[in-house]
Length: 256
Image 1 (cartoon, helix red, strand yellow):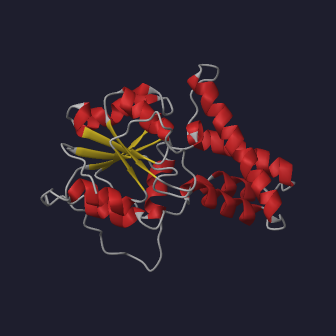
Image 2 (cartoon, rainbow, N blue to C red; image 1 turned 90 degrees about the vertical axis):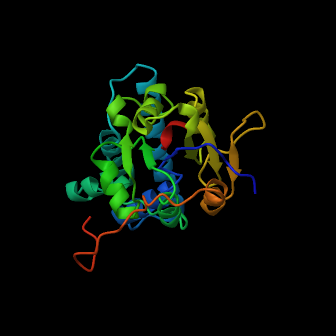
């Protein structure tokens, strides 16, 4: 397998790349509307995703003032409730926070832990300031730093979002690797001078023949191998705290 060399910092997209967003949304919709059959759940999921895509595009085009993902998810939850016919405020409110409870892909947690032994590892997500730490805690994602696009008052692929990661990395953009399952996300990072690695996911946006990324991988195990084959351990691995209780307390524009 080809190596990716001369990287100092690794940056991960979160939604779709490290967590399975559609599966989490489906679970939230089924919980809110248990009488819905699978076709209805898919219809409601599509309604949610189209609303988010449209509103994030409007924000990017300057047609709407910035609103974070929690606001947009509240709007989407109300649309789903209106369409499905449930009105209980507590049910709608819980559905609106489903973005905090998305499951990780099977290889995500281990890959982050392994890479953190060799590199500073950052998350860069469209998820808002309040949603992102809760999402990370639920999915078991551990970072040296997690960055929200809300800081830039924009959504990827706006260039100012990638600049957050470059500034946090503290090195030249061509020493920073952006990892994502969405080719549109990697193109945005590439336009800011970052290196890029595509990881295939069922819900991702695959590259076209015209995309020239530093690497394309079928899973995070392959990415870890490509990055660490000649890297020494730096001693920066995460150390998980001992649990304090038996249970946790804690496509283009649509994801990130």
